[in-house]
Image (cartoon, rainbow, N blue to C red; front, side):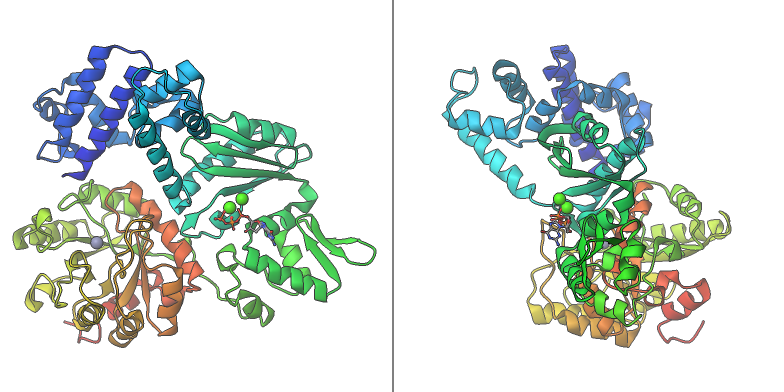
Length: 576
Ligand code: DGT
Ligand code: CA
Ligand code: CA
Ligand code: ZN
């Protein structure tokens, strides 16, 4: 199925449901349902059609066609957003139960005033749903199963989901009078790949206005605790948010404490004790006499402990304390060190945007260079051909240096087949400026074969980067079975970089693997694998992983000036 079509199908189906549960016109709801199915089953990619083209799909009229165009232009459809906002938060949370569905959600809300998942589970157990039309024993079992599924998946959420929610909440709370500082802390600030809950800190004299505001946000579905020191809510997406308000003079100590990790904090507290001090979320105090010696900034707190300020991404007790005490903390790579993206797609394969738009957006980010790496022929559904990629190369050459003087590299993302061979012969590969090579199929070959397969790709003189090296999908698919130490050593030996793929569901390599690969002396490319304009901004998550893997700009080839990068891409071959 074509991905954009699937997105539109889901969106129109949701809109049909929203119309139904807000008591809208039943005919209209059915029309949207029909159009959703027609678009879902349409063989061609609907993101490339204009209003006239869309209207040729059966069941798609002008108004629906315009919404589809709006969606691909702006990423949202105004009326859908507005309708969503009219549904009570509790019902929106109920709708997220995979086996309940919008109409039943509305029914339990209206008839039984149930407005949270927990209340619904309790009501089922107390057999309170038995009287409702359309609810039998089987439905009940089904709903309970759905709740269980949701709670399993709801254990930890992706970094990007948490980041989007947290940034919205921080922006809201920062607007309130009396707010001197507001930021997210916890595992989110440390950029862990998944987040248990979001921790937000506010510095202010009075806490009540912030605590109240959090419980009243449009995205708040449920209030778990509402107090003076701490308030916890659950959002409509099922994410828990903890808010603490601290006095401005203990902001630094509060941030240090609530950023964690717990393991890191145990180390800092122990150091404090050895110095005759006591460290808490309120500050650093003298054990005798209780005088406060540091609290206003994190810097002050660390400094009084004999440590430099430690980047949050390193605070996992993985050697950062020792390195800090010796004055040997790494200068970790930051987003602004990145000079270009080395793995991106266009609508020539499965990207959403044309080359010109991707290039213009990349140039806006201030990149010095940018690689276009569409899929190669062996990923059959992408229908790549020699002619198409060569025509693209012409276009790339014609745009080279045209946007803010950004230089373009023409590349491809090859498929590593089960033997370690790739799509094109050497003579053809020769023509690319950069080749990324990835495993996209046959994930289950045995460990030795998988290791040999990837090592062989590294030994190919044209392959520069191993894309998403483990192929894991966080929470969905484990990484491939391979002797990663052997792979990492091969990368270091052959001058092949390991990708840190910044797509939030991949984050591949992850932090532990990066640390291992780095110990073998391998180099890295932090790339977005962007399939749309918006994906270019995923870079920050890849940078989070790179920092957690202690990487410096020296380790990351796309922080290097173009000349040095080009020498690396030649892999020891003589310049042509
Ligand atoms: P998460 O939410 O599971 O992704 O991970 P964190 O690290 O955000 O953990 P969370 O939300 O339980 O607590 C936030 C931070 O607060 C944590 O990283 C360190 C600090 N903290 C919480 N409880 C304790 C504790 O019992 N002892 C110490 N030393 N620190 C704590
Ligand atoms: Ca947390
Ligand atoms: Ca928490
Ligand atoms: Zn790929």
